[in-house]
Image (cartoon, rainbow, N blue to C red; front, side, top):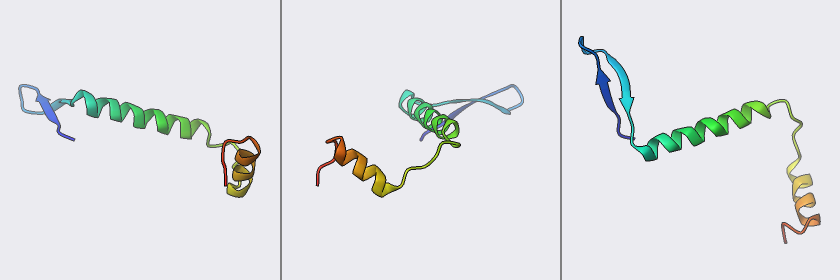
Length: 62
């Protein structure tokens, strides 16, 4: 990820310039982290139970 900085008169970094691709990737990561935070309190599902449900729904095949 290439970054370029914008600096003020005294040379202090005040902003960063990213490529649009890197910016979109960062937004996706932030969204994913927000979803994880929202679901933190939800009950978990055992992997075997999940596979059984997916097979029962026809989504997963042996």
